[in-house]
Length: 258
Image 1 (cartoon, helix red, strand yellow):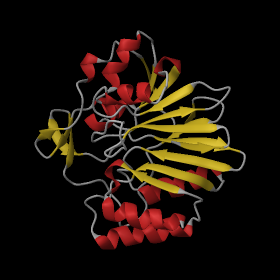
Image 2 (cartoon, rainbow, N blue to C red):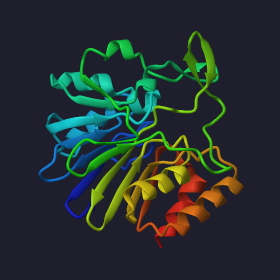
Image 3 (tube, helix red, strand yellow):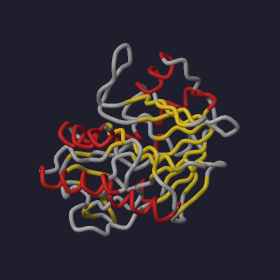
Image 4 (cartoon, one colour):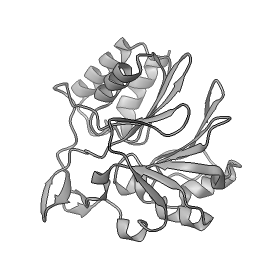
């Protein structure tokens, strides 16, 4: 759990969490701010995020907006379990999220047909969209550098054939506050450095907190060092790596907070 000004961020699911919380491969984050609707960012793989919310005393029925960063099961798989609240949540996605997703030959997406009629899906079409007073979504970011691109083992099924997945549906979230922005990512498949640079360009404020999955668990050490060097240059107040960041990258990135 992290607090910034009056914003409260609660990690409801991650690959590792301290007991008595449950952990699974995936990510889910609850965003609460006085005077604004609560937002749920990603839902991990199962209903585990709901169980953790109960353990933490969080009432998910108060959530109005749900944001799904991309279409992999470990971020969208738990969405169907929100139907237990019998509430028409607004679910923000990009249209490309509904394409079937694969990791090599293994299906890595979700069966969207089981959830399309359960919620109020809001399709994001603009580069930046505001969903509450201080909460914005943006993406997909441009892939500008020469060391970040999506894992080549990921594919989508498009027009009847499997093609490489460049995560055109990837959404990132920003909480815009007076003293800076909070930047939240799901997996940063299009590159955490690319995402940070675009957030700085769009909002023209310092990043006081960066958190989420950075998808560096398979990255070679030289790539991790490039990412660490770039992140260091932005002078971000605090960075909290989760989920798919990987042990080595998490250690190197967390060291920037000292």
